[in-house]
Image (cartoon, rainbow, N blue to C red):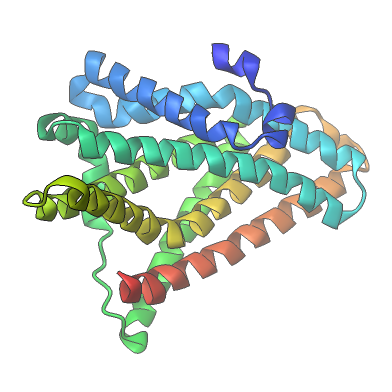
Length: 283
């Protein structure tokens, strides 16, 4: 893609905020192409379009991060370097999420039903209606954590088998979260339609802020976990492709892989706790 010629991993790591606008661009293009050509399957085609656009920079980043394993000896310094990639991937993820939320809020209902059909079904299926009771929600906590662990396993597996395959799972999750935020915004804005002038504008900003905060509170650490898992699988995949398993450095790659997965699990535990015990209390 033309954008890839303008933004490559080293530049992206130095200016991670640019990935937010890349995510917005990829998503907007994917939305309108899917609505224009594949209206009946738009909800999935949109995800594939975003994935195809993001694959080159994602895979090139995997190669860059794997090469760092060959050059950096200190584990702390290596993890710090990997965090640069995680940060700019999170910016891209936020860009995709925000784009989905904005278009969900603005497009006509008929288009939304076509564009976010699968995402809406997923949101309804995973809506647990937690109550805020610590004991009652303990089983919900384990259920959410187990489901998130499965997604993490798929992220690692997809990245390992397909190189940058984890981007599909991450793009899918971004569209689901974006649809959830957009639905929250759309539903709450409707209650303010009787207001006029600056009061209405203030209500709009209030609802949008609440929608973003409600899902980003647990969503950001959860998605960060998937990025750590995808990065771990991608690094191992590149190491195998480059036949580095024949060198002494491969032990270092495996150590790095294990550390990234452990960090991902830690983020998932924190995200599940926030989702079950904190978010329902605040919202």
